[in-house]
Length: 128
Length: 354
Image (cartoon, rainbow over all chains, first blue to last red; front, side, top):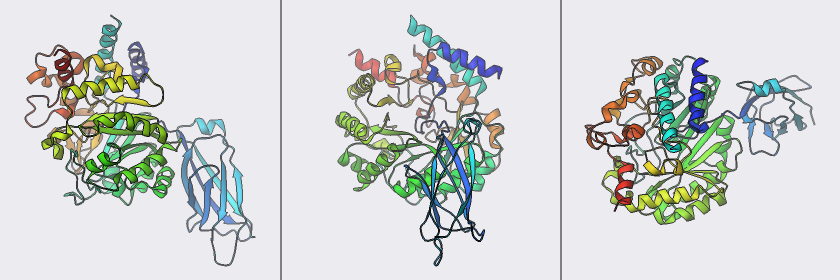
C-alpha cells in the first residue's frame, strides 16, 4: 500500500498520469475489466426440467449464447446497469415450444463495483 | 527546463518501477502455428510449427504460481496466430476464472462474426489487430490475396464493440509508407479509435529484405506524420514503445520511452521458456515452466532486464542520451549483444544534422 502511494506520487509528478497505463510493443492495450459475468440456467416451469438450446441474448447487442444440456449458460458482457436479457426458443425440443422471455436484470451498485461482477439468473419458461 | 525536470522525474519513476517490478502483463505464446506467411515476420512462424501448441493445463500451472496478481493483470495471448487454437475460448475462460483478464494479438484472418461473439462471451477484454497497408500492400506483405478482405471485416467487428479496448497496429515499411494518410482515413471510417505504428525489426524473415526498412529520411517523416496526426482529435495515433526517439518523445506517444520488458512484462513462450516480450532474443530466457516455479523466477531473476547497465556498450557506450534511453528496446539486443541493433535516436539526429 505504501509503495502504491509512492508510485502514484512519483508518476503524478512526472506529469504523465498515463505512466501507469502501458502496453508492450507487440502487445494489446490493457484491459480495465469493464464487464460482468452473466450466468444462470433455464428450466421448464411445468416440469422443472432443464431446457437445452435456448438462445440467451443481450438486447441491442450482438452477443448471444445457447443453453447447454443442463440448461446452463454463461457469458461476459459489457458492464451496464440494467441489461435486458432475452430468452428465445430456437428449437429446444422436437415437440414442445416455450414462450420467449425478456428479463431486465437489476444489478446492485455493490455488485457492479466489485472486482469481478457476477449475476446468476434462474429462468423458468412456460410452454407455448 | 520543464522538459529536463520531467525527464529527471521520469527516471526516478522508472527506478521505482524497476525496483518493485510488479508483474502487470504476461504474454503467453500459446502457439507458433500461423495461417499466414508474412514477409516481415520476426519469428519465422509458419503453418507447420516445430512446436506443438502449449497445453492449457501446463500454462495454468504456471499461472497459478502467481501470488496476489496485480490489479489490472492481463494475460496477452500471442503466437503465431492464437485463433488457430480450437480451445481459445476455454483458455480465456480459465484465465478469467482466476480473477485475471485476457487479451489477444491477431492477424484478424479468422476473426469473423461468430468468433467475435464467442471471444466476447469468454471475457476477451482487449484486442490488437494488425493491418499493414491498403489492400494491395497489405496482401503483398501478408503473402495472401484474401488477407485484406478478412482483416477489414475483423476490424469492423472489433471496432463496433464498446466492450473491447481495441487498437490497430501497422508495421511501416517502404511500400506502405506513402499510404499512411490513406490508412489513417480508412481506420477512422471503420470506427477505429487507436492506431499504433511500428517499424520492422531486422530479424527473422525480414532481415534480408530491404523493402521492409525505412530510410532515415522516411523515419523522420514518420515521426512528423505521427506528431501531426496527434494534434487532430479523430484517432489516437502513436508510435509504439519500440525505442527512444529523442526530441520526438512526447510528440509521438503519451509517455516517455520506458521499455518495461522484465520489469512489468513477462512471458511464457511456446517451449515453456520464461522471458519478457516474445520478440526478445531467446537466449535471455530466465527459466522454464517445466522445471522452475514461474513466479519465483519472476521475483528473483531477470537481473539483465532490471539492471541494464550492461547495454552501455557499442554505440550506447558514449551516448549522451543513455540515461533516458538505457539501451533502447530490449528486443534490439540480439546475438553477441555487443551493440544495439537499431538506434532510433541516432537515425533522427543523423538526419536532422545533415
